[in-house]
Image (cartoon, rainbow, N blue to C red):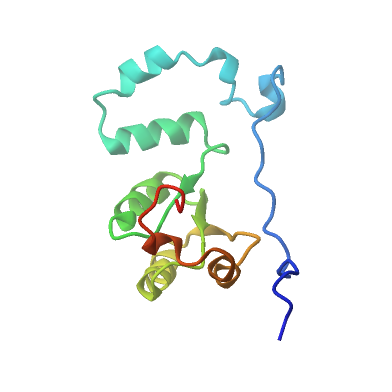
Length: 149
């Protein structure tokens, strides 16, 4: 039986997530559409505030084609957003955090949507497995205390 005081061994870690460019990075070094220093958020919000979801995603695709990412829980409504976004950004990285606590149906749905939309899926897992977490801390979701959460 393994010694539970030793940290768990894991497979190769997921690839690092690319950070935003450091302040002062010239726009041409990052791409022509991405210059956070020149973003006028009030103007953007004014333009997109009443826009359709499709128009908002089109705007992102036009202005941040290589900087956008999408996260998903593969919940029941995930298909709508995945369909909408991948119509305009077919290669967008789609981030899924696999906690090890998802229902079997979630993994099945993830597989179905990944195939249907040909997702550029990036799965990230914690360094500590679900089994390790439960052995150390119990089933925190069953506890009704603020400290457990």
